[in-house]
Image 1 (tube, rainbow, N blue to C red):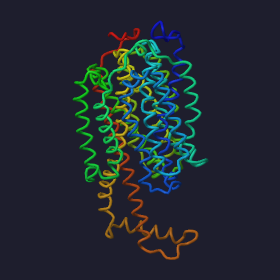
Image 2 (cartoon, helix red, strand yellow):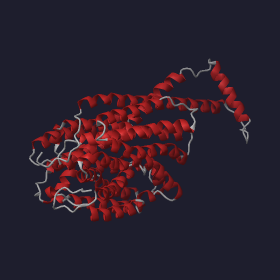
Image 3 (cartoon, rainbow, N blue to C red):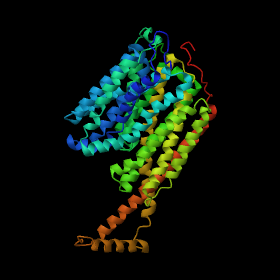
Image 4 (cartoon, rainbow, N blue to C red):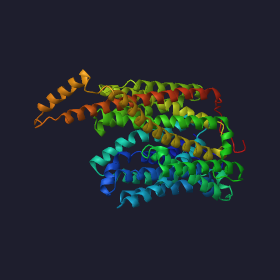
Length: 523
């Protein structure tokens, strides 16, 4: 099967190219979530507080967000293959440095370097995939890419917890070393720059655009990551970061639309499918990452599952996604991709509405099946949406378009996590105020519950020497908090389902993609 872009490019089977670039993507996306469960261990090992250790996550996300939209420009300037291999080398070496870090400061610096190396891996890999396959096979190409993008954040927390419990948190970084080396060898052998990149003359560096991009996205990512912890705009320093982010991003848009050689070509958003696809992927990313945050809270905090049991409940959803992605890839071209997207959104929304019926007496199977349905919906959303988004994009602008697209998915994920954690806290407070109003000395049910708790404590083994009223009250209040948090989780699941259902409106404005050969750069 030919996978070449022009006569001067070596004939390479596109599936070998897919394997080469997918490894780097999987490694990078996995690293965004694999360290989450290891934070307490990292804090203890490096003598840092839990709040300080969260910068291990924030520093990576900030540097990652800065590089993402500029990846297309950087690939054109330095050569795509050379730039991709440089990013993998930087990511792999910084992973090794993270693993041997002896202080929190050293770890944070290494995570910044890791984010800079990993930020370009997603968009450059996707651009190479879409150029290597004929347009009629773009569905299958996006299915391969989706394995890294969708599956990695699902298995990341489980894998991170297993490595941390059985070995050390440092293995969350060491695991990247063999994958990075293998990815380098495959890319060196099977990936080549197309003619239009090899012949392109380096443009002037857009220093102003690069500076505005770094400041704007860096501050925005910090605001999203620290918002709930710092009570959003009640924090003076966070408010300053929000203002700086807003001003820098507005100036960035104005500047990039006027400069001759922008570092992020926003003119590409004149394409209707790309503009709508970017917006829909933002919402999809918010729902995907938001629901991923809720599940560990539900299973481990409220239901008392171990990290391993929680991972077993999530794993069938990832398996469902893995099975359905190639099926969806084959259907594209035979069925209108917009119909497949509608099917995916409806399936995901149905799964989230199903999750809004969860309660504290649910069985293990009740947690598994909605996640399986969500996994199926993710496959039937991600693959056709990505295919439709890039259906009318030329090869020459593909790198820039994939950078914007992947940035918006990541920002959607960050925004989704920020909104979910905030709503969870606010709704829990609301439900607690309602329930606590009924917990008083004049309520017979409360008095009966306190007596039952006291009897249980007295018959405990070993028995409690003194059963003081505050002990029973504390246990009762703990149950109130558990109930209110459960109600808040249900509310947020329902809201995420509404968001996905509303996004169906965007399908009426998408153009139906064609499935001929890819357009030439002149189109």
